[in-house]
Image 1 (spheres, rainbow, N blue to C red):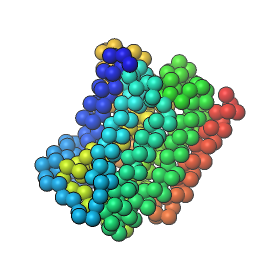
Image 2 (cartoon, helix red, strand yellow):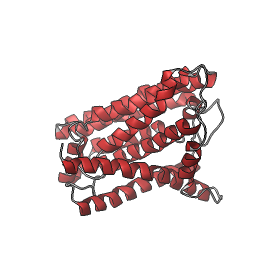
Image 3 (spheres, rainbow, N blue to C red):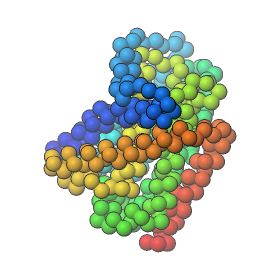
Image 4 (spheres, rainbow, N blue to C red):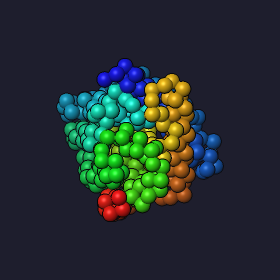
Length: 315
């Protein structure tokens, strides 16, 4: 584990944590302007987090240890993934463990603990949200695994840094059928995993339709701040996977400061563009019925499976 690789991983974590709430603020502002509203300032998510951190922590007597540690596990897993995913450079201290399976199961770990916390509270809405979250996760996580595996077939490695480096060395693979199919599958999963329309509405407070919000109704104060920050981080992580795995241009192949600076600007532009597209689509699209969500995710899994099939036959 080199000193420069450690510095790159830490830099990725710090920049991701600092930028994630701002990205959510940008998306809210875009939606507001398209809907004819002034909208909140871009820094509003940071203000909300600061306000929550200053409040008292309220815990129900019916909850156990799972409810208490779930926010920490959710944030820790998202933070670790932010250090593993090659945002700035393909050279990282976590490069040896930064493979597809580590990322998928770290994301799954946070989802499982949050779902268990929703059940631990013993409320009707918490259990309902956990059940819905597990239904989505049961299809979404395998789709992530299969979609990125389709990219690893040609490189012979499940390491994310190696996949990005291979795409940089052979740019034509970014427009190959397997890459396009995998991108479409991962895009649908990104919408589902981050609770965006048409799968979920991040701004809703109607208990009968919400998924993520139903699991965190019993949280308040610092615990809720950790959950919200983790949700912001997961959004950046999924958009970073979409941008750097399929459009990796701009990412550094060394740990030189100037290259890292250019990579930070490049990935910021790509993530903001993807976030803006999601925000624009949300304005003109309604949330689908809950019973149609598995059908949408099943379609994404089929696309990921077709991507794997194409990667073997067209290799």
